[in-house]
Image (cartoon, rainbow, N blue to C red; front, top):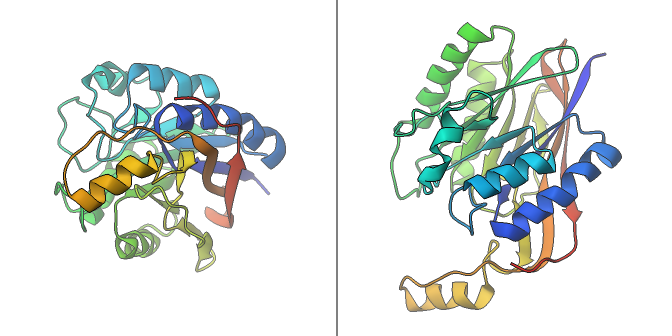
Length: 275
């Protein structure tokens, strides 16, 4: 039975998050048998966007693919990487395209089977409205199947609302039952306890959580975050440093049956680091 085990890690927040990924990837491969590791690098640059240093560190840590979300273009220095076909980095499939960025990443199993990862930004409670996400998923999958007709697809829904993430899983299950094998949620930085297999074939989780300092407010300094909420005014948010860990999900996919068999949440603690 050809099984591939994929580790999916939540939003990387600042330097602690990058260090957490560097610590976690060898553990995932050695102790958990992960064949492929996919990381959301959305907040790797001090909590907003991805910069070349962060990209280099995540790739050196062993990430096989890096996705972005609503901060995908906060650092324009990432433009060249988004255009480079040799860099496994992709922008969300439903945003406007100032970088002429790729919209999915193709990975290969040991048997050369294509595993494709794509991200879409949701709409509910999101400050900037993009193309309707479910239509964007369908359009993108139709396009990628022209290039990779045998692809097994992982969809990452980057959004606030739990309902939108759950609905995305069912949309993909019904629309693409033999193609989409996993739907994950990102963006909230809080891991949810609902890793599951839907109707015996699709792995899903509402949110993977984050890689970063968990002794804070979604990776940021607790005092500054609390003051900002109470005072209702913009202020500098420093990255937290305590309780560094990586959270996400492990998924087993049977590539011959074209379905997910197992989904399990993971949390890997690692030493605290200075920002």
